[in-house]
Image 1 (cartoon, rainbow, N blue to C red):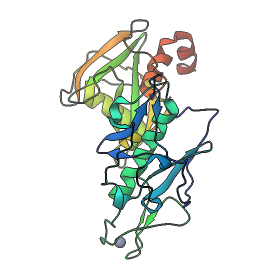
Image 2 (tube, rainbow, N blue to C red; image 1 turned 30 degrees about the vertical axis):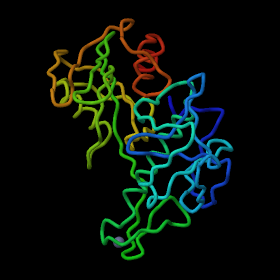
Image 3 (cartoon, helix red, strand yellow; image 1 turned 180 degrees about the vertical axis):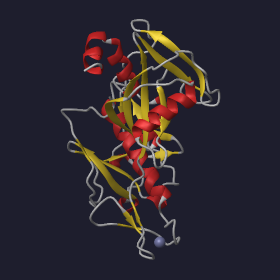
Length: 286
Ligand SMILES: [Zn+2]
């Protein structure tokens, strides 16, 4: 999955160091990121020294991957669009790729963080300008004491299983046109397991058994933490589609599933896991 960058390691503790020449800068314009593709189609993020104007005060540290430090623009400067020789803006939705997994993960994480800083410059309670806590990743309101932590929205990815069949779907009205598993946000007051049952019933009208937790994945592009579950069908297999959410939902036999693990998304890893009958059944029916 995108976050699986071992033996490299992702470090996210807060730090207030000033940016230096070789630090990477992740720059956005709307939902696009400034990137370069080399001859091998690998993605490259610019270093601070490549910027035309190198104004240290406009940048803040975001995180590191091993020794490489990534910086983002401070919220008050995010509107200024940077141009760097040899780099262009590419839509976030088009840059997912295995050969530059570490870069894709860095871009997604930077996007997640930058969006949170951008949206919380002012206190939602009293409208005072927020300040950064010196101890942790938290914005603090000097006016009323409000503490604002990064927004991480829980959502579930659901593999509904009917013996040798897996339920695949396609979203309605979204950019992503490939097969996906059912998915949905956890609502307030709900457990992740309850989200699974509610989403399956709302989207395809099916009843299910007890969900079994598989793995999780940070999905920064939508500020999510995704929790993957597999669950058995209980009762009728006849699908009743919610056309507002899905354009299609259908059962696919193991071995004939038109999507494979892409090494990036939890959804695709779960599909790949289901395809390995022995490994899947040993785990699922344990
Ligand atoms: Zn306040």
